[in-house]
Length: 132
Figure 1 (spheres, one colour):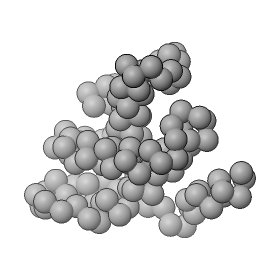
Figure 2 (cartoon, one colour; figure 1 turned 60 degrees about the vertical axis):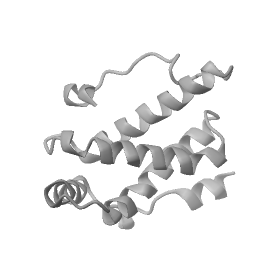
Figure 3 (spheres, rainbow, N blue to C red; figure 1 turned 30 degrees about the horizontal axis):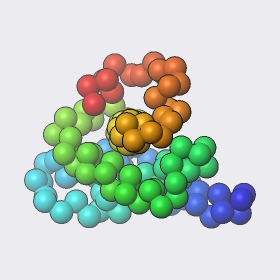
């Protein structure tokens, strides 16, 4: 199991920092580009790693990871105009991924599946993220 986990971790040399991610997002917002392929290519591994952690925690199945990552990116793209450059991009991205996960788990709960994340105590979040 640890070998699989190690294979899915992101190498720190391959990761862009918040400043570079913010610049990509601002470029996407400013250009009005309808195909955000560079941003998608950059954030998809981050989203996949987030949802892989949910697989390891037993909250989602491995075959659901790709779909959840796609839903989270679609949500990011729809909310791009509400992005505040003063909020660290990774925090904004993970909040979107978390909201996508909670929405998915609530739908599963409606279908009789237990929602372990939504039942956990709510964490305090940055005030700017509450608008997401």
